[in-house]
Image 1 (cartoon, rainbow, N blue to C red):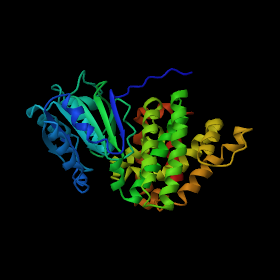
Image 2 (image 1 turned 45 degrees about the vertical axis):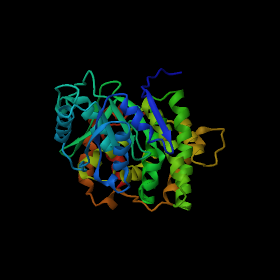
Image 3 (image 1 turned 135 degrees about the vertical axis):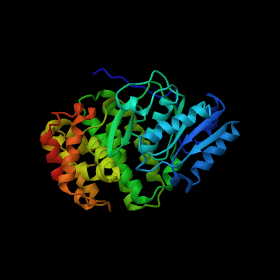
Image 4 (image 1 turned 90 degrees about the vertical axis):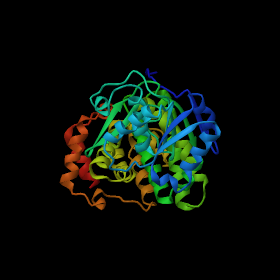
Length: 379
């Protein structure tokens, strides 16, 4: 079996109504908490609920909920200064992947005198203020990785954070019940892309393959449930379980060419990452299929496609067919041109993607012409 390293948070709470556990977990680290969130979470009363839970645990709270998609990286320095000035003993990140990445960086910078520029320059802090993650969605691909995504001036950067930054993750599946049906399904497809790319990754192992193959099966099933009955809350809970499996799997295997391009295009054009991932998904599968026919055949089986199980090379093309069959049932964009961005601009974004470390684990490599062809096919 291939060697692998996995850093798991010391405490992980997952399931329905686990949010109240946050108070006792946070109280272990002190009496003052800085909550980093976004205004949209007030709509479901999520921010107020977190504040109340922490107050009941005897903690003082300070809330910053003004993060916007275009917020500059300098906001992280401002929040870190706020954490230091308020003597916050713990940082709580409440929101989606963008918010959680900001909160991770804040907890690192607040522990010393470094700035966000230092993280962007590749300087990883030695320590961090204790950090607790409360995802508002089942899409949290960096959960088990010592990394964060920083967006600044139209560019997305993957930065390393101090090992052990994340002291706990509290993933209450109730959060996903407030997502719109369309967003919930798009998040499932984004997670499916991460799971498939992790499954094909050259850094994958028996551990990650086992988790990700199951995740692919569950994501496919949850998407079909959501299409057939959007009001059935069970599809969201099933997607949350699959999202957890995906986070554990990509914690070892990482993401790939589609994940990198979706981060780049999200930062450069402010496009919804989940939409970009959905559009790229079938084309990424087409790219990876001939590079590992055996795994492509396993993906096809996980997607419910009938496979012979005798010659993988015969079953491999059914992986792309299974993805397209699923996408045909969803009311989501299917072409990059549908997002009102010119092809030449997307080509420039593909050039930006070449410097991302995630491409190193793409089987067969990701040369510039491969990236350009993938974007052209998806356009």
